[in-house]
Length: 284
Ligand code: GUN
Image 1: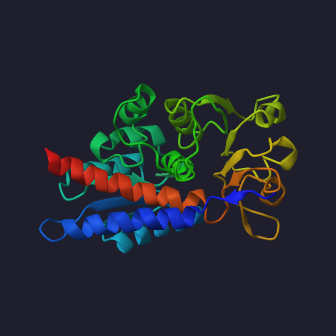
Image 2 (image 1 turned 135 degrees about the vertical axis):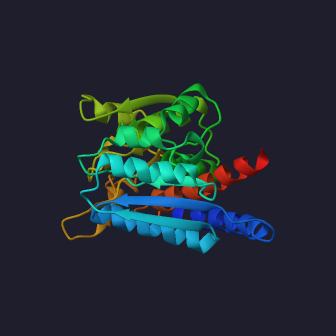
Image 3 (image 1 turned 30 degrees about the vertical axis):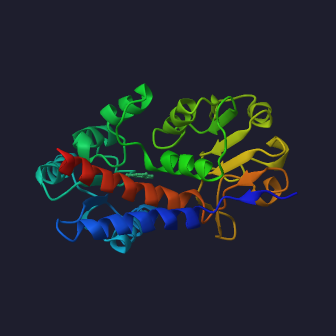
């Protein structure tokens, strides 16, 4: 038996369609939502991600404001750029693409973004809201994964979920979101000694290590749901995730492909958050 594919591309397309309709309605008598995207430096992967985010905004009618700053930008200059965007009433969401050049403190920059414009959900207040089960912006990648799990009507309550990777962007918020749905959650990381044993007893495995073949077929329980957050290039230069997909497909019940899995959902959730930032503002 081979695993069912969770088609992130199609699901993201549905989400984008819903947003497009809502933005089109809004545009009849109000300004449309606007996302400011800040890119510092020339990291090629970041440049691709940012381009895709801006393109996705255009497709649904969300306005985007692209702030491209040179690699040698000082922390002070980036903070004043953020201050300007914070004060601009026509900007609803602000995204500063990470990683940042090493002369800049990422944490300082994240904390400088207004909480109600923090569509990445990285600000301490939004992180705290998630940890406390309160409303706030939630990071896009784990939110996208939750939508993917909803799309297969997977009952998370009481299930053992393993999150491999403990980043602030994916692993930690992912674990909190699964916990909120009453899964029994384990977080594994590079120092975990019994990864295979943990994986083998898991109903859901989310892999976000940035390392190819972190999860191999011998680690997977039959019928498990496998979510691959990784985006890597293999020795042939082909895109691949963190999971040995071809082999794991033979064991798992569901699996997400790379490309066409979590990646498109991350971008779709950014649009959802941007629309939410806009709508919250107009509710007051
Ligand atoms: N770098 C890698 N993933 C992300 C993300 O989701 N948001 C931002 N701002 N930077 C990233």
